[in-house]
Amino acid sequence: MVFSSITFLFMFLPLALIAYYAAPRSWRNMVILLLSLVFYAWGEPVYVFLMIGSIVLDYFGGLLIQHNRKDKNKQRFIFVTVLVLNLSVLVFFKYYGFIIANINSVLGTTLQIRELPLPLGISFYTFQLISYIADVYMGKVRAQKNIINFGAYISMFPQLVAGPIVQYSDIEEQLNEREESIYKFGEGAERFICGLGKKVLLANNLGLIWREIKVMPTSELSVVTAWVGIIAFTLQIYFDFSGYSDMAIGLGKIMGFEFLENFKHPYMSRSISEFWRRWHISLGSWFRDYIYIPLGGNRKGLIIQLRNLFIVWFATGLWHGASWNFIVWGVYFGALIFLEKVFLGKLLEKVPAVIAHGYTLIAVVVSWVFFEAVTVGGAFDYIGVMFGFGGNAVIDGMARYTVRTNFIVLAIAIVAATPLIRSLINKLKTKYDFNGIVAVVLCNITILFIATAYLVSESYNPFLYFRF
Image (tube, rainbow, N blue to C red; front, top):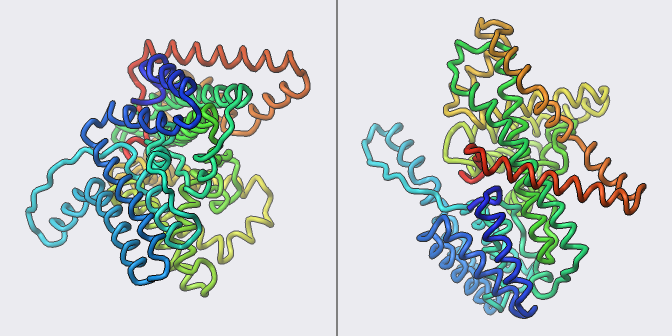
């Protein structure tokens, strides 16, 4: 079940909110847990038991670690055991086929690969499990004694299948006590509708542009067509994923939770380092806190920094998918960030902002070719066309037709990727008081109505991050 579906919007969500607010406050975490398990089982009836097993494992693992504070060896053994079990489940379901395929390629063996469906959200909730057990082990938080509260934290349906990755320390107090109010409910509803509009009205329409272009042989692409296609995907993946994050944050707020922001207009960045402080913030924070800093971070010289960055960005790429193109995508970003740390960052601070911004946008757009390509070779072929190395035409009829028929959605998407619309909404609310608020409410109702109409009439409604 996806948020941008008629089933969720007009059946599951209303019933979920009625159940949540009808329950006494002391039962609401139980309601969240039950609703989340139903939500997950809707699409993954078998794998819901895998999630329940993971919750039970880490719940008791946390308690055992805390109980053995004075016995460091036993504490370390429990932590490593739980950590290995968590990672083993993720590796088995997500990387089993990739590992076997590479063994066959390197050793010339013919080991059979059995296709395993990927449990929804396993990359996200596994990272939450790991962050919890690591924080308990390091003494940053106390183990949660209430298994209902812990289960609600891991399985919480607003951010279950695609994040943001919520660290336990950020939500510990809210699990025990949080404030629900009409004002927060309204804020959450507005944020949810904003995310729904991003997903349905922008991401889906941008995806149609990319879907037509990506299936074309590179020999038939013009330079402009290649750029238009990957720019459409660049915008699609932003509105798809940030839209989901907006919906998750909005739903959390409706139920009294405050989740941290996951996107802050990343395409406004003036360096790749800044881009990754604005894009998928919860993932970047996770890798920083649980891999980069424990490895030594920036403290041990340039060679060690390079090693640490390589490990982090190799893992970041691999986290996104079991394929070499994702690994190349991750290492590509790691290399750029290393260059910015060495010399490029200081240079970007001195050049005009438009040049720094242009460098960042081009680097990011190129990165999405690696991210979306089926093979690394295919990615380089596509990039070759973009920069005129394939001998392709500069512009053709396909390019003209695509730009002409999609100009409005591309223009709206580009503006919506900046802070301009959010600034305008805030200005309406503050400057025009009641009239401004009414205008914003009417705008939200209109977005909800149009998005619903699209969902009823359109069959193209993918969600890119479900595959991760």
